[in-house]
Length: 346
Image (cartoon, rainbow, N blue to C red; front, side, top):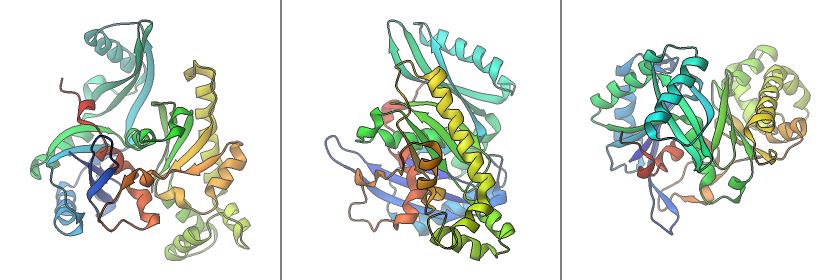
């Protein structure tokens, strides 16, 4: 299968070859742009625009080749619901009943409008720990329609933060340490607790574009000037640092508060081992802003680092994306790394 990530204004595809005992190798990847209005609240509302972008991607924008028609697709985490659950030992039928009861109690959407699924994180004679995931039928069905038109076979859908977290398990010692994963996209930021597996996630409705907008408005810049300022200086030490920090402080403060909520949640409810969050790991296009990791580390009093899986995933003979652009491929790489054995056939 190959991975596909349809974002706010672009789509990315990647196929990775995996062989036991050997590094994973990217055999094909690419990105194409489309106008933002084609996807509204996660739903594809202008399928003709998405179909055109897909044809452009597969026919003109690929580096290498994608040979499979079977697709594992990321869904925007902002439009999914995730909730960890602890259950006594039970079979699949009883688990399904339990997640429907849980969803009916805690998800503010009628169950008839949702697709529900679950992922077991641990299971023993004492009980089951799992992650309940739900998303709108309208969103998933809009993807199905596109895939039928493109003659693609969808085999898996999952929240984008789940796909990104999968890469934490690719040969990393850090995966044994409880971490906060912060995926900063263009319009939203997903925050998740990772402790060997994804435990719980939340979304902040701001991202890299929000920083650009704040710089544009508060420093009276053009969009191009604000983008250049963010990319070149960010909030790292410079003569412009304080002006930039002041301009985007509301978003920075909001991000810190949301991360602190996830840390508290893990400390109070999710951690049964007595372990504490060891670090913050940032991913996504917005995470490459200079100075961001230092700022978060100082505010949260935790080590903070960009996640780089590319030492474990090779581009082989292909020309790789530049270092900045590689951050945009993390989610789709996580989809491409999905093992077929993880796909439900119920």
